Each structure stands twice: as structure tokens, then as C-alpha cells.
Amino acid sequence: MDPGTHFAFGTHPQHGFVASFTATMPAHLAHWFLTREQFEPVPDRPGLYRLTEPYRDGPRRTRQAVRDLRAQGYSVSADMGLDPDAPAAAPRPVWRHAVSDRRARIAQAAAMRSPQRRAAPTTTAPVARAIPPKPTYAPTVHLSAGRSR
Image (tube, rainbow, N blue to C red; front, side, top):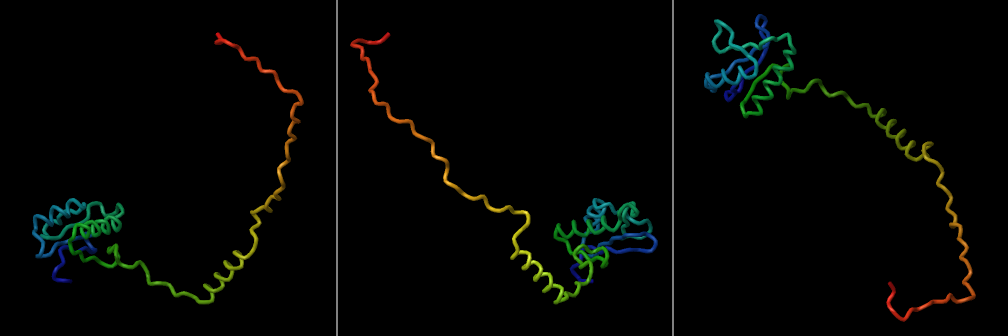
């Protein structure tokens, strides 16, 4: 374990999910943090804490405790299954021909015309409205000499 580690998390055959603190962490502060993360002191084992109700989604709650303490700036050591930053599985190998076949299918689909698109509507000139002929007479305008009421 790294000398600067503050907390350690793991599994115990009798107590389930457990946590402990190192000498670099004050005991009263470690107790405060671990009890807030739903861990309780194990009787007759000073410095060892167990998760309360481990059957109620214990691995997820332990990983969350590790994540929370790291977010507070503490150095935390955890077993592989309880470390949220550990890779879940080894990366899978990439098959070159499978990738190139997929790319070829995508390129072929992109080059084809989509069956969902309709043919573009043909554009025609709008129908012109007939303008009425200009009247041959001039309308009479009556102007009054005074003000109108």
C-alpha cells in the first residue's frame, strides 16, 4: 500500500465489506467520514469498520464511498472489484475485416438514394392573375369648398 494512503477498502469473510484508515489519518476524522458513508465500527477490532446492511447493494455502496472520499481529496486503496476507477474488463480485440466491412456498408448506404425521400416537386411558374383593364372614363371627384362635418 502507498505510504500516503488514508483509507483502505476490501472484503472480509466474516464482516463483508470493510474499511480501515491508516496512521496518516486522524482517528476521529476517519470515524466521522466512515460513519457518514454508512460504515460502523466492528466490535473488538479497533480501526476496522463494516458496511451497514451489506446485502442491500453492498458493492455499489462501497464503490460510492471510495468515490466520495477520493472526491474529498483523500488517497484511497480498494480491492479490484470495489475500485470505481479500475477497468471493468480487458479491452476486446478489434477485428480489422469486421471494421472495414462495416465501413463499406455505411459508404454504400450513403451513396444510395434514401427510399424515405420523395422526388423533389417540379417548379412551375405561378399562374398569372389577369389584371382588369383600366377604365376609359375618369371618375368624378367632388370637392367641397368648406369643411366637411
